[in-house]
Image 1 (cartoon, each protein chain N blue to C red):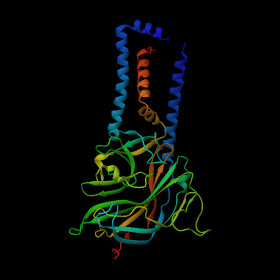
Image 2: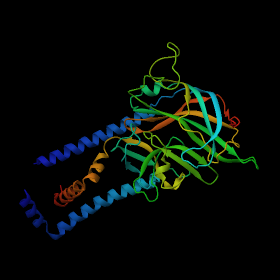
Image 3: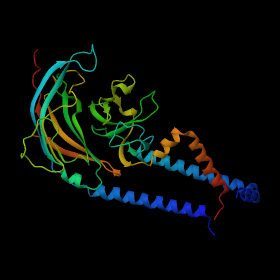
Amino acid sequence: MYSTFQRLNHLSSLATTYVMILLGLISIASFLSLPEVDAGRIDVKDIILQKGRLRRWGAREEELASLRFDIRTDLNPLLKSYNTKQLFLYMTASYPEYDPSSGSVREQHDVVLWDRIVQRADIRDIRAVGKKIPAGKGKKGRGNIRVEEGKNKYMWTNPSGTFRDVPSANLTLHYSLMPYVGVLSSGIAATAQGPITLPEVLKR
Amino acid sequence: MLSSEIARLRKLGVQGLLFQALNFLSVVTSGLMMWKGLCLVTNSESPIVVVLSGSMEPAFYRGDILFLVNPPDVPYEVGDITVYKIPGGDIPIVHRVIQSHTTNTTQLLLTKGDNNDGDDLILYNGMQWLERRHVIGKVRGFLPYVGYVTIAMNDFPQLKYALLGVVGLFLLVQKEQ
């Protein structure tokens, strides 16, 4: 009848097929049942603009923006989802740069100012960033993201070297969900109340 | 076992051998067709890639498989995990877009690995920005561990030839049911 080799071959191919089907079903089910999250809020505390050099000696001087911000959002539903391996949180500034002569939008910019990897294991309560929060203040628990007076992790610069033609910018905190297996998804975790305006450059 | 197989091959004759070779070729070509079909559907030159470095840990480890798409006319966004290839460099790199500067005609991108301290400017081989034409696709799907087979085969080329030889031999020798 059948040889040992044939039996082994048949068994392994059957096992592989079923595991693949199962993984496919898991990815589809978890993608379809992905929970909605309410967008939390970002409060910008302080924003300054100064001139400086980045990256290397002898580079041209450019305008550098730095800010402090608070974030409050609850990503609990996402973390309860069984196929969540990691959340990558990133705060973007999105702003148009206008052409001063014609007044039309010359360039649309999107830059990441701050990010943070949140793994399933260390998702307790993210309070390690910025100032220490007094005990008993705010909601505690898994996935309750709270950043007090966080600083931008990446220096905020504009390719043209100046923010002169940039009146305002929108800040948004996005999440990018990494599954154990299946489809990657992303969404908005928090937004700032209205666009932020960039101040005058600090004189030295 | 081997002598009986040789005896069977003798019995097959030239026509039988050619038929087996045809079988073998059809397996290879159907594999190629599926791959190229996937390339067409996803609009990406390489829709399935294996992670080769640890720069996106803990999201992606060495040996994980990524499924890419490259939708035409849809610009890449900040936060997308892209796979790009710099002219002159042969290894595709899986990193996240952290800056995008879009004018009417061009989109300039800057990328960074989640696990890296700095951005990718030093990887760009002298270029200041990444452009769309360098990007192979963005990651849509994820399958862990499976790609380690290919990494093992790259690290130990003998394994690759041994595997290819064995598969070829079996396809040639296998009796039609």
